[in-house]
Image (cartoon, rainbow, N blue to C red):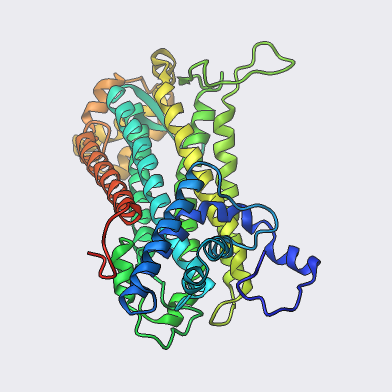
Length: 457
């Protein structure tokens, strides 16, 4: 295969293999973004006179054919392919001759991969947002269904105060809404086109970067050309950091589910269709998918460190080190999407054991309630605290559901304001779905056949 940088001197096979690594495997996920970028770039080159109308038409037709072949599973990277950019350009040159050779005018593989990764990130972040909000919606539904089911609340792994299943589930829904806010920031950072920065220093041609950005559905242009190059890895690292935050949320939820489904707790049961067994112990029903969610949080944290570690201390401009951020970035997205789907499915199957939950609401859970009864009678809190603490053996249990209803301040078990969470989740879910449809519709329009000429009209 001809290399885009080839100057006639053969590259040592060991060095070539080391430098390519497994990049080709991950570049298969960038074929569609690379085609989209080339379509918009070709239109811009025609607008400034680098391509004729006929050459633009040829390139459009062949790039759409690449996309068709890719979607049919007939165009893909294989070991020995240098990268997605080389693969596609060589294909265009073989089919179109000079028109294919012209497509690289005013761009570098550096800004090409920047563009591909940002287009990839935009779509995948929206997919994560949708999965995350669907999981949050399931948690809110579960909270609503079991809003008044009492359960112990814990601090230091010890029973502390009365809580509810609704409070527990609603807490994780709200945590996921926080993670959605962070995902929005990651999306915004990726929503500026770097194409036209070339190898970090622009080109001596009157290219129209804003036109390309608009055609690809970006909010604008990553302005400074050196900044655009230096952002390689930064946008990916921020995205992985946000994914790590979502995985931290899921890991806490997974740990709770694992504890609360043990025989010792018995607060929840999980559908038999989700659990696995043991090869030696006939009675075992293992909630092992939650163990993997818990473990995969550590994996994504590792991807975060891996991505950021590559970037530390790199000088300005392109450095080959950046190649090592692609794998952890893409793998973090896939891992998080999988964990969100599994968590949503698990929550949808959870069934509280009301008898075990009530049985766990023992008298000591109400010690603080008794202290506040004295406070309401005029006793200073510190004195009430000591009086109850000195007579713990005399505590009697209270009616758990009546006690829950007394907690009426905002966000407490008697006033969870689940309708606020429901509205927030569904509004954001609709927005994310509409935005993903809009992104995909814009890309579809770019790849559709039309009779437009150089002006793109």
